[in-house]
Image 1 (tube, rainbow, N blue to C red):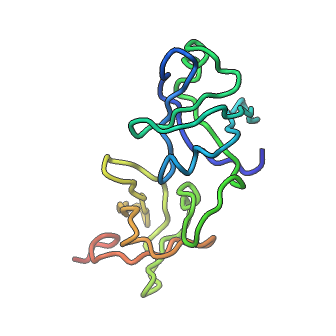
Image 2: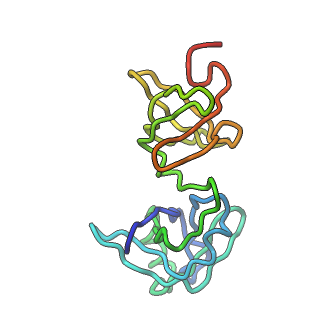
Length: 169
């Protein structure tokens, strides 16, 4: 598989016929239910699994995968991450894969000031936060459209409020 992207993590079984319940890493599960194939990492390789049926239930992705036909097979996949090919997705203007912002410089859209680089993405309940580090100092940037102006291959351009990414208030 070319250019894999992690899309979900299987967190449990659903029912007794091999359906898996997954926490998804997309804006909505609807972005994922049309996938025909998902992949599971097996060492350096990815094993394809045809999606027989996909749906959403109580905010989770439910999948019936080829070769997973009973609860025992589904249970064996608990905590396994699912991948898809980036080519399976069409991104609109200014949409991006969150994992692609890691390592990018964070630049003020108005002033050009560099606030540091995105080190990781964390979720503390309400939303994703980008951990921005410069000179050993860490700031948390909410992954919200009010703050994220534009994402390019080179940088993450932001419009922060005072004190969000610097010590000025």
